[in-house]
Image 1 (cartoon, rainbow, N blue to C red):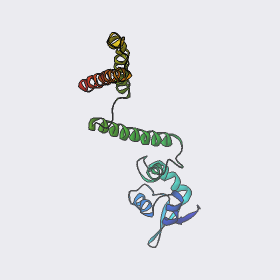
Image 2 (cartoon, rainbow, N blue to C red):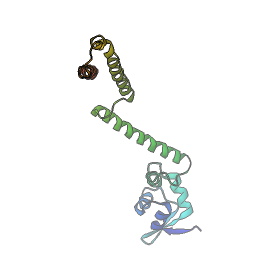
Image 3 (cartoon, rainbow, N blue to C red):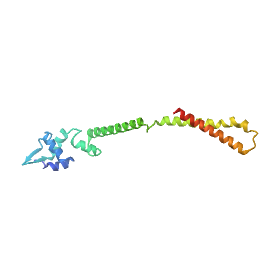
Image 4 (spheres, rainbow, N blue to C red):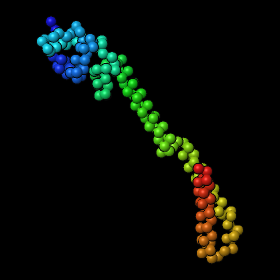
Length: 171
């Protein structure tokens, strides 16, 4: 004779709710292991464990409860399947979030940003390096520091505005 316990104790043993055990009895997934003692059920633990494992799908009962708890206690192929499925769902949710953010305009391609930043930096550099070629002849005979400073500041400002203005127009 086996080790008999109540449906509530068997639910605790399996890590599921008592209604889940009663549902398994009603569905005929636990038959050989269950006897009635008046209104209550008495369950043979060893036999019920065998029936439970053989008749409970990965999407129901203990496996479903444990999958939500991080696959604690799931063994073998069921663990691999449950973990893979959970990971797949997580990645699909992440991809959906990224797609939404991209369409909403809050997420941009990092490579495109790097290319654009390089292009703007090169335009600024080229504009700044061209200043001496543009103003050298004009400033050669100049002796007034104020005039030289004002003219260089003017050219630097023009070079920066030109580079940044061209970048804004490209976007």
